[in-house]
Image (cartoon, rainbow, N blue to C red):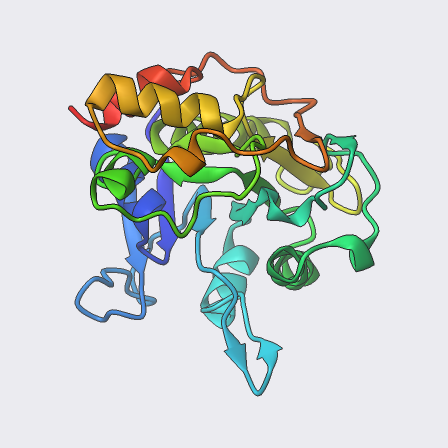
Length: 266
């Protein structure tokens, strides 16, 4: 892959990992002025804009995309692939298999998921051909379930033995670079990966995912971490939501969560 020019909107966990581990040319737009190194007066025309900023509200209205004036001006000068990291929380908790083309009843989305849906709607109102990546829970070095359990943090554990969709940050970066490159080659303003009400949508999930109890038992045995017994004997979930991808079949480094957690802790 040739070097890409990438403009990072927001410098959260995923953007920082990409910046530090994948060799491309980067510029940063951040609310932290000490981190921003993009100058509107310089001749930097990105191939990809990566937007990882969660919903931002003003007077109860989402105001994303942040920096839209700058981004639209850049796009008018030279079109680029706009990539937005969204969330699988958009998919309702119900007995159903979801892929990118599965219709969704907005009224059935959880409150958390609805915020992400509304954010996607805002993004595509400005960038209709944006690539939306609906990611499972992002983990990796310095941010993972093993560290949370070591610190006896149990608030985010589910109350049922359901599948929790997660993806290693390395693999998420692979996805955004791989599919971003495809859009650059096939046409920035084309619907290459069509989804339900989206021109370009990819579920950033693995093809195989395990129930949370299996994951917790592995962590307990592998890392010798004490976990309260009640979390090791959770009840069967009331619903069986399955999230898959029609497009996402690249060769991942950490598709097996066992490798992912071990790799994250070294």
